[in-house]
Length: 371
Length: 98
Image (cartoon, rainbow over all chains, first blue to last red):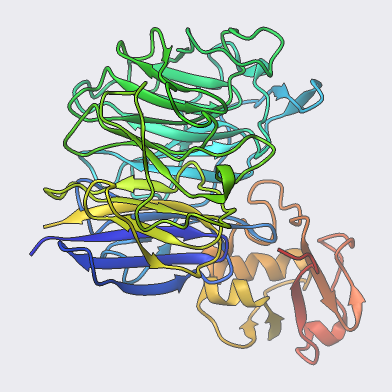
């Protein structure tokens, strides 16, 4: 029987939420890695029993955990992330040069065809790869070294590489996104990179349409349409139809175009989801009403989805890696909040219910669809 | 026999309960104790000191015999009471909330 496994990373541990295909009764296990920050967990598309987790703490730094049994047990693997060669400098908040220093892994992206191959997006922004199940990590230095790295600057949350997208149709093509540098594309499996930010405008930087410097919060792709990418930028929701060559704004009638996550319906490549947040200084939903917005037209025209979500006195945030979709026949949507709630919709967003209400602040949500 | 006390979050990571007891060959220093500790529990590499520079992580402290040894040379001899096992070597998470 089909089912889902939702992997939740929080400020104080990881939780695994499971349900059958109806998605109305849930089992909760955890906390795993109690007391540690779990920035991200993700399962391998090639082997759903293989799950990688990024575990870190201010005291003891970075640990990578791996499960080979679907999240029942985990064991630490390699945690040495050394930048290739002499790291050089990027810009600090005040514009002065600052040496690259590894802080943590924000995002883990397992390869589509090999459970032992996994990519890690890190702070300070860099891209690493492991081909041995996480035991050892090597930087793909072409991204940091492609020419604009010295101009990258951290966003408020640090200079993080938070999005890694592997193109299912063109295996050598991959995308990465960095706050606050922008979007980047490789067409040779991560060896060389170029910025793909044409069409982005950011009023918070001296040259609003600069090649780099944009605070991209999240990018999403539907696997059947790999040239179409959707982006939630600091402000503005954007779309490209040519793999990042040019972007156009699709914020349309959103109540605010600030936000963090963005995702795509599993079976409808033009159906997308965002969670509008009031502003960069007010990280909560407008008017205290938590609403997901859905566009069935690939952007521009949006409808609020509020059924089952709190519509008064709600002042949580939804972080960039905290939304996911399953691929059951009726697509399920999931997101977690900084207030510790994880909400699920088993009907593509028409109605919502909390799976859990009182976890630590949720940093990330991923879902595995199990057969 | 050297007795080492880990903070709770590292005990969970290493899968140990209570004190760790280590055999250290040669001079008993912070470096040789940590080398032996990481040799027995490789998952602790990088969580107490940097894996390349071996510099102590900023929010980790080393105590023994009611003294703070965090700023001592890693190659300085540890007190006899630690070397004999009479007193434990304490690896402590600094008081920093979060």
